[in-house]
Length: 137
Image: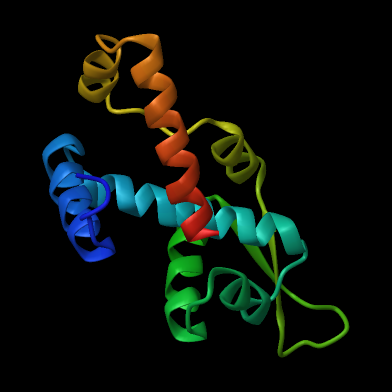
C-alpha cells in the first residue's frame, strides 16, 4: 500500500477524511485563520497591515478586511502610527491576547473516537500530524 501511494492519492484520501471527521470545517477554518492573524499581529507588534500580509502570505486587501473584522470583534486595536500618520499600527487587545492564549477548540466527537485508539495508534497519528504540520510551515 505505502509504496504505490502517490501524493495526489494521499491528498485526496486525507481531504475526504477531514470532511467526514471535521464536523463544521468552515467554522474550524475560520477560527484557524483568525488565530493565524492574531499570531501575525502579536509577532510584529505594533504591526502594519503589510507586515501581517507578508507573515500570512496573503494580499493586503484581504488582510485589511480580515483585520477590520478582528477590530470589530474587539481582538485587535488599530491606531495611526505616530511616526507616519498614513500607516496604521496594529496591536492585540487584552481580549485578543486571551483568545490567542486559549488552545484551539477540539471537536468532541473526534476526541471521543481518538480516545478509543491504542497508544501505539495515537503515536502513529501524532507522527503523521507532525509531518503534515511541517508541510504547512
